[in-house]
Image (cartoon, rainbow, N blue to C red; front, side, top):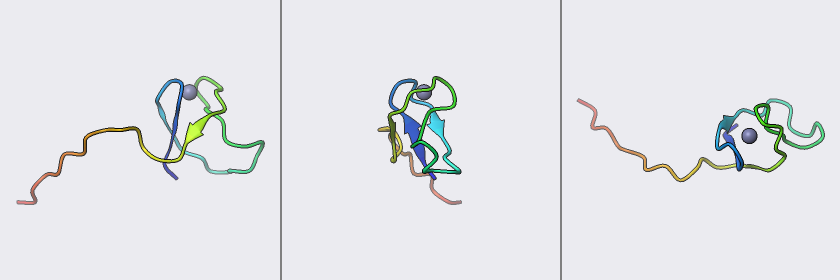
Length: 47
Ligand SMILES: [Zn+2]
């Protein structure tokens, strides 16, 4: 699943969601957002 921490902005993979909620394994922050951070996705043309 694609989560990312609102504090350290690291992508976090939640494997067992529901275990005391989701929590960042890096900084311990408990606010994760489900989508990716606003990153401009560059579309690469398939050659
Ligand atoms: Zn974090």
